[in-house]
Image 1 (cartoon, rainbow, N blue to C red):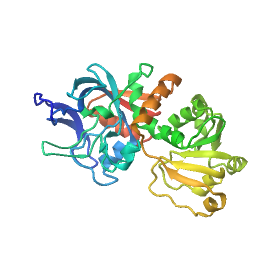
Image 2: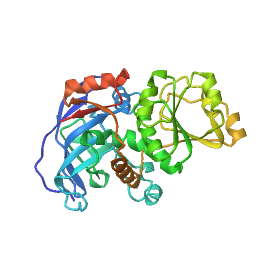
Image 3: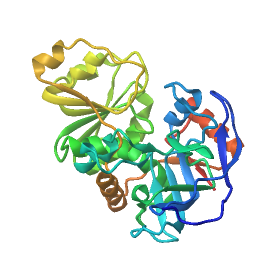
Length: 352
């Protein structure tokens, strides 16, 4: 049953065509349902996947397209069945905003793997007035209360949004693979995802190495907690650490990686987990087979993992390094351009 409300008009910022510039956009949202909340958006992080969607690099983008899935806002309205959130609470919303709550994956607490998941934008709604979901480049938003997570007081509001994407993306592999104190861990790639992963690994008590092509990032890596630094193009450095890592987390999204060189860093029974999305990954399987290695991926996070991550970040002061701009159409384009040119250190945030 929907909660009766006036048909409001929301102000947002949208791309009207593939590779188009962000422009002002207004829409009438679907009525607030009994299990939903309405937010006044305070801020929204900018992710490289927003750019991919605007460019329709992966296909299936629906226009007008309102991107943004690192959302922080204040609850303005609640549906009649919402019990755990109150008006005035600060909450965060990530890439996923719904699930079926009845499939095998939902039943086992892995809602992020639900085949009927709702995404913060681009998911069909079945309502011609708002044919698909719209994201956080907006002044207001309506989402399932189940997927709006209270932000602990210890997390600065503008830094909370990127935790719901870059944070959960790099947190979950450590949890699922039981990575912890004393293990030798390598973070491959050091950017928006990598600088979060380094902090998690360090705070979990791991021997934390950054592995990157960029030798000038050593001081930054150490600032975030890295105890070691390897330049991946330096064959001597790579050889010195051969067969020594328990776990590698790859945040690499570029092409041209020689993956066998990274597998060579793993000790037998080691794992390489991929959260970056290169255009393609190719390698000969011999080194995996002969050393009983595991190559795997990780995707988003369950509701319980998100809650636990936010608690961990608050208690251990794990926050993204951000750059900010006021949210409007012009600055949305500026932010996306900086992301595309790899000029952000390390996450871009737009704020209302």
